[in-house]
Amino acid sequence: MCIRDRAKTVENFVSDVVHFTDDWAVDPTFVPFQPVTMVNMDVYGTCLNYPDRQLMCMRNPFCNWEDAQVCKHSEGCSNIDCKMVVDARPYTSFTCNKCQLLNGRVDCQYNFNFPFATLKTSCNNARCTEICTQADCTSDSECMWNTTKNVCQRQVCLYPDQEDCTDDYTCAWEIDRNPNKCRLNKCSAFETYTNCLNDINITQTICLWDVNAKDQPLCMENPCAVETFLDCENRPNQLCKWDYDMDPPQCRQKFCKYDNENDCVQDQDHNCEWNSDSMTCREKPCQWDKDGCDLDSRCTTLLSYATGAQTFACREVNCEYDDQDACMFDRRCQWDSATLRCSERWCTGLADETTCAKSNLCGWDITESPSICMPENCTRHAKTETECTAQELSLIHI
Image (cartoon, helix red, strand yellow):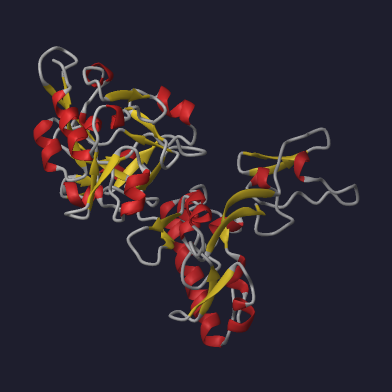
């Protein structure tokens, strides 16, 4: 604690008296000179409330989770409520492990051997709060100067990159800002499952209970807490998916976050597929019925006769190219010189291998991922693109 003047000294003294009185009121057995984590040592806040609550401690810029001396005075023994051992002069003085509390009295004998600790990992006052000048504060890489309170405090969630930010459960990477930045996590203050899920925006939960967190379940921000299909599907970093299978339909985090094709395609519970264009794993897009598929501009309706009757499937649109060279380089695509637009070849509209095989001009291509019906070489059937397309349409045999 920085003592700048006598007025501040008085203020600190009064603050300590208030906390001492509060402690006594809550716990009649309270004894002064308890562990340092239980003593108010900074002017603007106390780490008193977080002795065993790491996340709450780390959210407070005046506190830090670290090893600290258990007893305020080094002579105190943790196993006897930080009291000092009995003086045994003229004999050799007792050590902490030779003493115990017996009916409120310290009883020491040379044949005792009790465990005790000098350090404890808990919530302590941050080292930065002991720095008194702005120059010294800003020169310390762990500290920052609080211009509002005119004090030095520990840096909280000022990581410059996303990986370091998200590794700290105190923090969250702000994806709705441009540029993105690291900030305090809105949900890590909720320490129970019930409180975590009670923070709701209309029908969407702001926070999620993460049972897969590193050390213990934690309350984390829900990156998909939006209410409409478009807001959901347009979330930054493509983190979210509008799930029509939920009742009611709502926005959720995407599954299929695998980094290799083998693990990706094995997860059929979440409809995962490997995209050979982007070399990424994703949930199969466009899992709608025909009506939903027709409404989603990112999707196209496919024709299927796999069961004998005409049915429909839905998949993501291909051939979203703006220039002719890129369009013609992709075997799935064709360029319309009149409209100057790229579109899919007719064969790609056949949904499955069985239907694809019904056309003499199409073949099922397993070298693409996902597999797709592709046009065969049309030059042996027609002399022009117009004739070829006409033959494609006539050479499907049902």
